[in-house]
Length: 192
Ligand SMILES: Cc1cc2nc3c(=O)[nH]c(=O)nc-3n(C[C@H](O)[C@H](O)[C@H](O)COP(=O)(O)O)c2cc1C
Image (cartoon, rainbow, N blue to C red; front, top):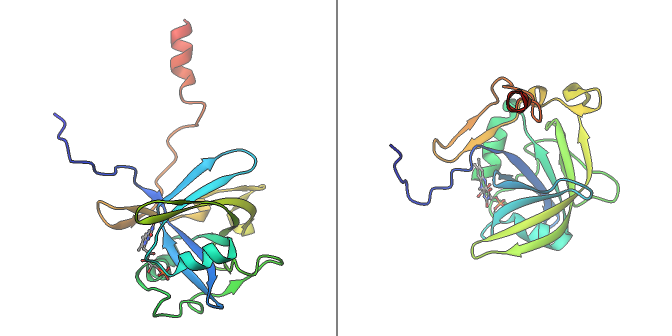
């Protein structure tokens, strides 16, 4: 029998990302797991729910650009640190080595993250407690080590998945079946 468990948000796990921006002249990094894919097409839009209490918001709102860095399992300590320390009182800029791309100096990239995206702020949705930043992807960079041909191999990225119930980082398991493919067996059966 099912039990109602209030209005629990059951949309976990989510991908753990680190957003980078410039605030008050220095790079600041914030761990964000409330992420979404808004428009899978051209252009591509992503969403990030960021509490208005955070230091990062002023940088994103001012610069209208930010980086989205995807950490691997080996960066769990630094990733968590970016999520427990605030730039209001702590300089987080030298925890990991950074780089910038021409024209996007306000979107510092974390070199140790195998995948980085640069997003232009396309829209901000002003919710009660959170700014929902909608970013348009303008460029994506990936370490050659995590590419299979020119595509990202998610097993090689070995990303950190965040779960709110257990308050833990999880990792990927094994692939289960082909997407847009597994259902074909049932389709075939129905057509028999
Ligand atoms: C795993 C993890 C995920 C987090 N996800 C979010 C999130 O999606 N939205 C948010 O507003 N804060 C989130 N946080 C909290 C911020 O990362 C944290 O408060 C951070 O210190 C704010 O940094 P800043 O003040 O320098 O911007 C998360 C923290 C952790 C550890």
